[in-house]
Amino acid sequence: MATKRVLMKGNEVIAEAALRAGCRNYFGYPITPQTEVMHYMAKKMVEIGGNFVQAESEVSAINMVYGAAAAGARVMTSSSSPGISLKQEGISYIAGAELPAVAVNIVRAGPGLGGIQPSQGDYWQATKGGGHGDYRNLVIAPASVQELYELTVEAFNLADTYRMLVMILGDGTLGQMMEPVAFRDEEPIKVVDKPWAAVGRGGRQTHNTVTSIYINPDDLEAKNRELQEKYKYIEEHEVRYEEFGVEDAEIVITAFSTCSRICRNVIRQAAELGIKVGMIRPITLWPFPSAPIAAAADRDNVKAFLDIELSAGQMVEDVRLAVCGKKPVYFYGRMGGNLPTQKEILEKIIAIHEGREV
Amino acid sequence: MIDFSIILAGFGGQGILSAGKFAAEAALHEGKEVSWFPSYGPEMRGGTANCSVVISDEAIGSPVVNDADVVICLNQPSAEKFEPSIKPGGILITDSSLFEYAPSRDDIKFIPMNASSIASELGSMAFATITMLGCLSAATGCFSRASFESALYEILPERRHKLIPGNLEAFDKGAEFAK
Image (cartoon, rainbow over all chains, first blue to last red):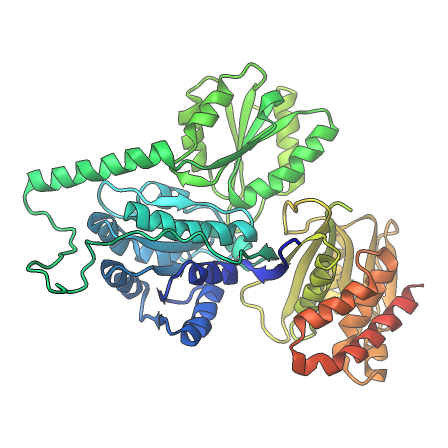
């Protein structure tokens, strides 16, 4: 028998997934359009004896995350764009101290206080580090409420495995929408030993220290080399993406999350007009699926790429690096909280097909 | 059925968002893919509120509706705002007991229904949106009465299940009106 599907809001599903993944510590500060994550956590943590704190600020919340992670606990915070900016100092410290944690960014339009409608304008901040220093976060971009569930559970496993921050990058659409979700009876929780956790000596002679400070340049360089080795391994092993229609596509769309959903409909409409369009949808934004995009660029049938984003064009730079000048890469984006319509994207596809696009 | 899309709009507090949830839940009970997306932000009681519901046999692309098969409006500003969003051949349902409306288009089907009057006869203004769901169901077949009933049992907490017969009566009145 098929598992029962229930209708739930994206934000609530993120919180439910975290609880199912064994997260018993949540620290945050409210901000639209992600506040339902907090609401859900506030209600449920009491029932199950977990820790929920509405901190006095985002800076405080991320440092609580640092503390819980240093003690070896599964921990999460969530916010939206301006709040995530405030958390960047703490995120850099988490990277430096190699702590496992999950942070959710339900992106709204910026810059500044901006607006509260959906955007993907935090792509650069999420994928290129965001705070100070040479570091990476693993960034996951779900495209449906079902994926929000499955990938949030997975985010905790990845965080523990690699001792780093995993960011779930959504947007206002995904957080606010309701869709059916089918929960598993049992979650695939990966139990990772944390002998480094600062939980007291427990009879041992020495204590664990969790820190990101290395005053000696040689020590710090060695630490950085270790981090880069880890990031390299992740780039080789954790790339996730969805690809379809590339084998006979004339145009390949690159789009993630909400944009990929809109493009899916457009691809169907283009097919009715006899234009073959495929799509490569990054699921991990870092590590970025450069290899499948490079492979598509090498195909004779692929004449051009079209990148669609809710920004002025951020991921398109990674697409261009992967395509490496072999084929033209066009871009269409909307900003301010607006979504591109199917019609707008279809017109762009027709223009490329007819050679009118420059 | 591919991407059958509905916009429900009115004042905050009229039950617009809940009605959208009932519609989505009813279609879910028929094994359909569904999505529900609210207007969010500085909305409040008395302000405008709307939500988009998409019902489909296939995975749903955008949950945000630009071209609606059906628009259901409980106030004049919403009708004016969303009439242009209706597909040619689509349907506009308004609550004619709350406001008089004359669509400017002739390529849509217009159903002015005295939903609030029917609801007050049944004893609760909260039934107004339910009669409109009955009308929607009968006019388009996007979900059945049985699925709507299942949705009520799913969404309403048990202490409110005594309200289900009243809701079904309201639904039936709306369905009769559509015929």
